[in-house]
Image (cartoon, rainbow, N blue to C red; front, side, top):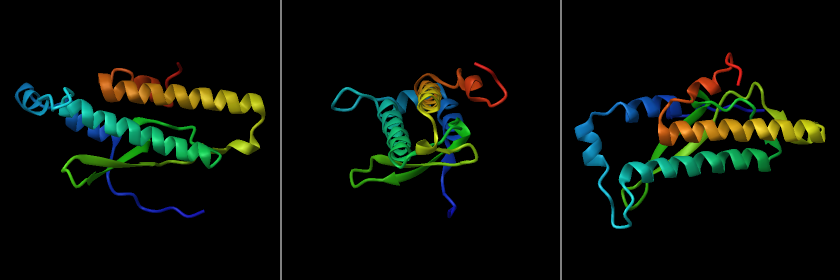
Length: 142
């Protein structure tokens, strides 16, 4: 097992920076593009896709993260050729991770349900604000 340093900011930090902008700067950044989707929404869609792809790679590698939270998702911004931001996502804090093949069928289903529920809360925070962050706290029961 080998760990590496990951550059970037947590999703929680990113949301804090991008949800607390002034109304004037938000209106400038939310201009619809040729396809009718504003830039802010496009950026959040790219992040959502990157998060789900990374989680899917974990699952394809027979690993359940089991501790998804806004703090455990690291975003590293990359620029594409068209000056659109693309994101590399890393999942950190693998202290609760489990190998899927070592779980019984009912444990697999329970672990997958929890992981998908946490992903839903994360996507809700990404698109609707941090109102559901309390569900992701380890100390808070759902």
